[in-house]
Picture 1 (cartoon, rainbow, N blue to C red):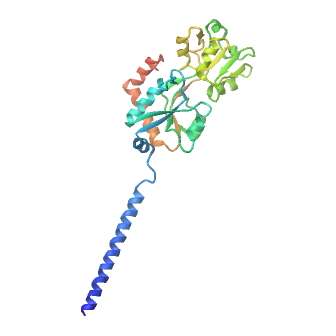
Picture 2: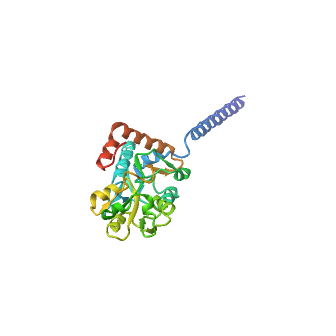
Picture 3: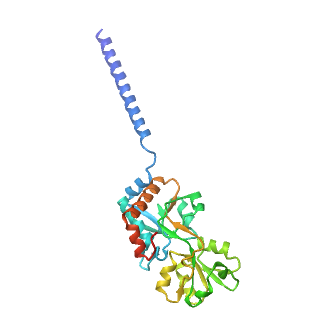
Length: 277
């Protein structure tokens, strides 16, 4: 009888042990289901302690990289506000206009977002995410000040004898190829060198943006932007990133809205010589 009683106690203990294991397993399984398989973009950035920002560094005064590696510009300061909102540092990652889309979509990921003179377009929105605009933009020209009267319309530029210089891979080259079919198009690899080449007579006209042209007119008396107040088109500059980063996009948009609301964006306009609308 005593032997039977001991066997019964062992059986009960085994049942309790199995039930407790099963409950623990269920709890663990439930916890695993509730825990996201992958952290969000913002979580990854905060955990890293640094936001990786792609920028061309060749577009005064929006994004420029000095010889010592330091970056400055309107877009660079907006990037600083984004990093401040996240509470992280910034690491700038070089990109270029010809490789911008490929770099945004690269695997493994090269940077979290790209900034600095990137125009919002439907084509970009088809394959990537773009923020709300933070700076008005539009195509215009730079030419030699001595020839400013010669270029008063797009038709004045679209002539075989007019040498139009553009940087490769971006919207400037695209605009020139689509709209200046009679002019002589010259592609130069370094955007920041083109204004000086125009002033030196290596080409006649540079296709640029209303955000870039004023800087060169102010810093080089040999240059003019006769169509600055009558751009060929209108657009806005925004922040570019890969799809699937909706939490980061929302945070960037919130930063831009806050900068508009608290007047800090207006101050950047004034600092870099833009008209705030």
